[in-house]
Length: 479
Ligand code: 4AD
Ligand code: MG
Image (cartoon, rainbow, N blue to C red; front, side, top):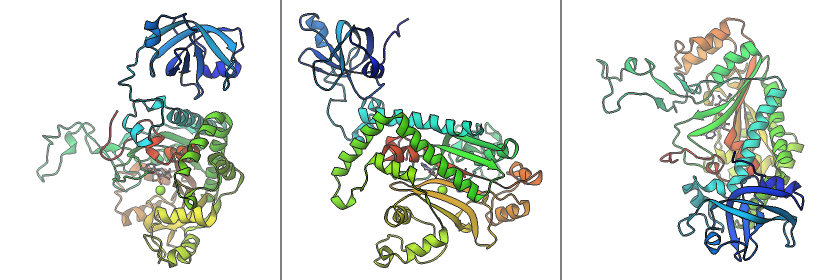
């Protein structure tokens, strides 16, 4: 057995002078031919490993370069130096893997996030990304814990499907046709009957429709999986592949839905603060440094942890789309024509500049907008009695914009069918979705939380490409 080691995080928190231990990790720096800063990914704090002078051959010391993997055995002692409680005095050091210092792209200095994105295969080895991905992992766990503790059933919705749940036409095709020789029918159109599934298939954009099938039998369910959108958006908040959490609840109306979503978001933020204090402190410091590059008036008033505490401790603002339009229309910002898209009339789709105005300038806290015009929302949302709006809700977060989209679902068969007709959604393909309304239909609701967006919010990372290990976006599918 090889893996008899103590993790650096455990050594630093609980290791006692006198203990004989084995550690393994990667050399961050090697100073004065004596002091190794060793990192094993369990924490950003390095363990100081001392190679006593004269004890090791020069040939070995030369190989202690940044990036090299080593195993060190020795005794913990109280550290005479500042900055650490204990350090390891090495009896033996083995090089597990050399790293050519001349060629290793990560130097012990600050690299830009843009540069690190290009070497995403190595960026896990930096403090920033190690913190981000440890927090991401804990947040994923918190999400499961939240729902499992409430008795929700975790449903695995399909990744390959024949439906476009959002009806937005942003799907990636799934095919095993020879693309140079696609079979065509007499009408010249592609003959999907000959394709793998016997019909056109695509990657899922959302597991919602399947979650509804689960909820209307199991009561409360959730999905947590990858979703794919072929939208050509090159922004700091869009990915072509992102993870989404979609709870779906039977016997829920829109207000129940909003209550659950707010409780859920607060829970996972608190969980991250409670369970990743060191990483959160590191990320807060990182953000503070980043903010210093900005002009004074653009800097945020609160630090990262402070901002998250504020979100947890205060109620989200809840206002209808109609109220939001009034606020925007009458704002000085609008009157001075500062919006790229001026707000003149009821019915427009809100742009991210509008969402950010509401959240960051007007309310200065997360906002839940509800009752949107039916024409800018998906076919499955429950139609309100006014004939104009649907029981939709979006949650907008400071610095990010929309993090949640959800609704009460249309449970009335006739209303759903007529809406689908109006929107040219083929009812035949979705017979299974309609069946739920034919047999024991019930009021139900749900929402989708964009996992990367909430991780962005919690970690304070500005670009969504920096909170998923290997981001997929237009013209990039590296690694
Ligand atoms: O608002 P959306 O499109 O809603 C749905 O997919 C519903 N079926 C959810 C439901 O009711 N079950 O997406 C939900 C969330 C958005 O609020 C956003 O946080 C995230 O998914 N999202 C994206 N995240 C990253 N990149 C993209 N391209 C995203 N598109 C949506
Ligand atoms: Mg949405």
